[in-house]
Amino acid sequence: MSLSQIARSISPSPTLALNEKAAILREKGDPVIHLGGGEPKSRAPMDAIMAAVSHLNSGEIRYAPADGIPALKQAIIRYTEEHYNRKVSPLHVMASGGTKQAIMVALQAVLNPQEEVIFPAPYWVSYPEMVKLCGGIPVPVLPEDGSFYPTLRDIEQRVSSYTKAVIINSPNNPTGAMYSRDFISDIVEFCESRGIYLIMDDIYHKLLFDDRKFINCYEFAKDLSENSKLLVVNGVSKAYAMPGFRIGWAVGSKKLIEAMTNIQGHQTSGPSIILQKAAAGALTGIQSCVENLRITLENNRNVMIDHLRSFEGVKVSVPDGTFYTFADFSTYEKNSRKLSDFLIEKVQVLTMPGSEFGLDGFLRLSYCGSLKDIRDGIERMKWALDLNSPNELYIGDRKLVRDWS
Image (cartoon, rainbow, N blue to C red; front, side):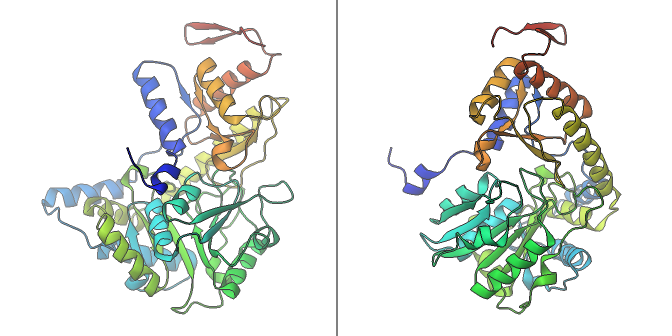
């Protein structure tokens, strides 16, 4: 079969593949623990559910405008004013089928073949593939100092005449690192001065710990005219625990939003009107669910970090936000894919290999599940890797005996 160059260059989503593997193992009745997932376990807000049910009961399930229904766009406008102190009009806003689609459409709107997109590493697994889908070249940048916190110098050294855009995800998936105020200020000013598009992926901006405050990129922008190349994307999947609703959005200049809307109109049309109603309900309804989730995640993070520190060979940084930690397991195995497969095979704990995020030897572990899963999952991992652990482990009624060294 003859496939396009782009099709041959794209890898499947490892996060979606891992979710599918977890579902298959559970269906078989295996006692799998999924520490690789990226979706909160709390329920969607009741305001979201009621808004969806109300519209469903109306029976008026029609096409939605390509850029989103007025109710959702107005909710996004209010959200932007409240959290970013930025007033925008409906022409500056596009709703999409998840934040992923907003980023994808933005890249399609600005990238020409062989142009480059820079993003700090470790990075979300889809960034390189999305750039390649547009015929562009992904340029991941690891901080020189070995930390998870990039500097402008790190980015600047990789800029070339082909650089078209920079993507910043803070707090970051997979590390949980929240980039410094100085860095956000520097990158906004740098991209403005060079005429480079800056895409701010703010999907985790409400999930911050230890009294940290979100850093608003608009605070540092000197050009907020219609010539601005700053685009902010967000969605309801993470903070509102609504990943299955697939609603995100983008806020940018009228010209860019118009181009993105034209592309989206031909690709998918507007997102489902029922799901948009639900998202509008979440954004305008009672907001206590967000803080409740944040508090739960902060507590879960503390438990996971404490348990990981019981490993002699594991190096772990405390995440500033999100629901992930990116831990260095290279003492046990430098090939993170091999290590992840080993943990699934031996103790049925699912983890995400660091190589998928641009840094081998690490595992991304999620603490958005239950405390029991966190404790039991780390205990199983420690038993499998730390040869000083007892030789036997019970998973339910099943006894495991270590037969490897």
